[in-house]
Structures are given as C-alpha cells and as structure tokens.
Figure 1 (cartoon, rainbow, N blue to C red):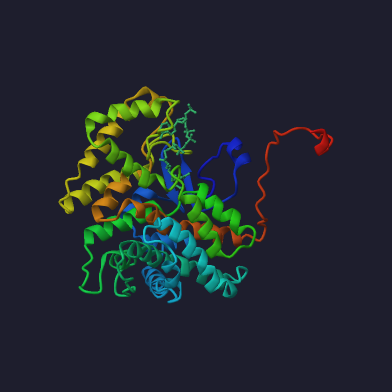
Figure 2 (spheres, rainbow, N blue to C red):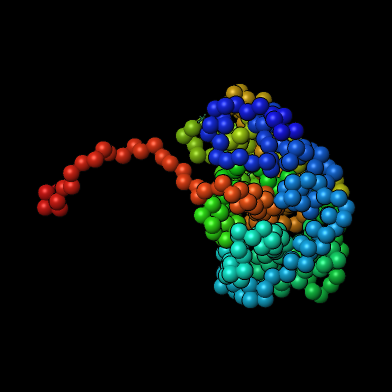
Length: 392
Ligand code: SDX
C-alpha cells in the first residue's frame, strides 16, 4: 500500500527522484517491483509479464499479456539498413561497444517519428526498444563469431526467440531447450529494474533534457558497461576462472582486503545492499538447477560457493557488510548456456532496458519534471586576479 514503508527523512532529503516502480530495503535485502517481491516474480512470473508490470503498473490479465506479447513480438525485427552498422565494427569489437553504437543509431530511424510528449508515441518507442534489444544483442554475438544474422521467429517466446537468434543457424532447425529458456527468462527478470542505480540515473538524466528514448537507452548502456556496475558479471566469472581452484581462494580474499591492492572481489558488495542481494539468492538456486539439467559439472561453481562461504565468515566482509550481489553467480549460468563472457553485460542491458524505459516513461509522463541539474561542492581557489603570460 502507499505509505506501507517509512523512509529515513535523511534519505528522502537526498533522494534523486520519486518513483513507484521499485523498492529496495538494503538492510533487509528486500526488492519489490510495484509491490511484488523479486522472489515471487522470479519464481512465478515471466519476463514479458514483469515488463508489463513495470511499464503499466499492474500484473496483466491473460488477455492484456497476450496483447502486450503480440505487440512486442511484432517489433522484434530491425530495419535492414541497421544491419549495415555492424559491418563497420571489427569482428572482435566488444558487444557492449556495438550495443552502444547500434542502439544509439536507432535514433536515426525513429527520432523524427517519436514525439515524447505524445503518450502513444512514447508507448510505441518503449515497445520498439524492448522488442529490438534481443535482436541487436543476438546480432552482436553473430557478428563476433562470423555467422549470419538470424531473423526473429514470431512463433517463439521472447526469450526463446533470443536464444534462437543467438545460437541458431540457417542450415538447421533450432530447438529451444525449455530449461535454458526458463533459466534465462528468470535471469532477465532478476535484471529488469533496480531503482536509481548508476545506469538508470543516466537514462533519467539524459531523458530529462528531452532527448529521444533511443539515445537515452544508449547512454544507459554506456554507463552499465563499467566493471563497478553491469560489467561486474563478466569480471566476476573472469575472477573465478583466474582463482581456478578452491586452494587459491584465501590468497584472493587477502588481496581484496589489502587497501594497497586495487583488486576487489567482483560480484561482491553493493552501494545499497548491506545484506544479501535477494537476486543473488535466486541466482545461486538457478545455477544448481541449470547445471543439473544440462548435466554440466563446472568446477567454477564450487569455487564460487567456497569463496562465498569463506568471505562471509571473514571479519573484513562481515564488518563492511559485503555480500554477493546479482553479478556473482549469473556468469556461471550464462557460461553453461553457451554465452561468451563478452556477452554477459549485453544480456544485462537487454533485460535492464525494461527498467530503463519504465523509469523514462515515469519521468517523462510527470508534467512537473524539469531538466536534471546536479550541483557540486566547489573545492577550487577563490576568485583571484588574472596573471599575464609575461609575469608567469
Ligand atoms: C550492480 O546500484 C545498483 O543497484 C547496481 C546493480 C543494479 O542492479 O543496477 O545492483 C548492479 O552494479 C551490482 C554491483 C556490481 N559490482 C561489483 O560487483 C564490483 C565489485 N563491487 C565493488 O566494486 C563495490 O562493492 C561497489 C562498487 C559495488 C560498491 O562500492 P562502494 O560504494 O565502495 O561500497 P561500500 O561503500 O559498501 O564499501 C565499503 C567498503 C569500502 O572500503 P573502506 O573505504 O570502508 O575501507 O568495502 C570495500 C570498499 O572499498 N569494498 C570491497 C568490495 N566492495 C566494497 N572490498 C573488497 N571487495 C569488494 N567487492
């Protein structure tokens, strides 16, 4: 209910904005989307249903969900000329570099037809972005491996369509593995939105100037790429692989505690959670399900479990309230499904586009909203007279 949660006045005074989308209690490890817990949504809902919940405000009826899914499905194809953008990149370009460029280029196709003051055109733009992100992400992967782009197959689910566009080839039929489809759909739910994180704040700030939503999402992709943010899932798996075996964990934990060593435990710690990130709990459970179902015995999972156990019993991590976050386990699942680490953050961006666009709509729809203009604490010199070059 409104008012069900009491906020710390100090927090409210520094809040960046008001939002009804997502509630986080970092001390209790609570994450709600429009009042529904991430645990229940990830267990019982689908990514399309969560996308509707975040953008429309309520869980959809069966008819509403079917209509929403139909609309998204029919926007998944991209303009044929957009495919030309990929040809300008080197084959080994990082997928996030491609996503930044290609999503930003969507502005060139839709900017003139997107009046952000028209609710219907805002809705069309949001559907286009939610629909085309999987296609663009799959194209980035195909381009990196030198395989032909796969057109969407409207008979598949949102997530099944993405799997086929990524791993299917024209030469043979692609059968979607239901276990993989359900796990990836759950991972998309876990990444859908997360209050005013760095990339969402970037999207809101860009949108507050009246920039078109395609350019705003491109700005969010750029911010998400950083290893302190969405790039952590790629960094976390690379770290686990570098550790390699349980006997090497203690050395890396000591490195993470050493202030003179820039090494951090990737996938650990959070700006808001000072308790378990509830998404990490669901993710760990999903790792077990996927590895068992795919009959994959990845020793890295054992390294991750022992690393978590050793860190959470170490006074440094206990005192600083450092727990695994959403990025700690996700890479193990994505790797087991067949994604290269370079695609991990692109998948995060694919899912977070739902939250970014929902936050953008919420902001743009507010008639009172003004251009964002953060201020600063000035630490430079006081006013002083100019010194001519001859006197310097
Ligand atoms: C995401 O905001 C969001 O909601 C983001 C996100 C989302 O869904 O959008 O949840 C997604 O970005 C998750 C975070 C992914 N990043 C990582 O896993 C990278 C590794 N984590 C760290 O870089 C770090 O924890 C941050 C960047 C996430 C937070 O850094 P802060 O703000 O410094 O964290 P803090 O204030 O809680 O740190 C307290 C102390 C500090 O030491 P002191 O200054 O007190 O001596 O703990 C230290 C930090 O240096 N610390 C760590 C650590 N994280 C914090 N020490 C070792 N390993 C770590 N991972």
